[in-house]
Length: 93
Image (tube, rainbow, N blue to C red; front, side, top):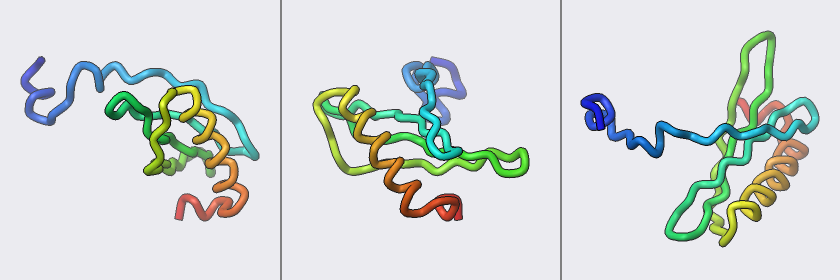
């Protein structure tokens, strides 16, 4: 591990973040990014939308833990869609 990664607490595993294919929904991009935690997966991800050439991002993390990564991704997508429907562009306020 290099000097800067030790200094800032980054591990090689964090540096190799997976590339996630977004799901488009109502003009928003949903990136499911479950976090492995103790043999389970925490529901997490990002909701993004472009405004006048600038991409706004809302980080989405829930306390729920699920046993499979696929289930956590699916749950996150469904919750993000519901959040978008209820909140709209206020997500980024």
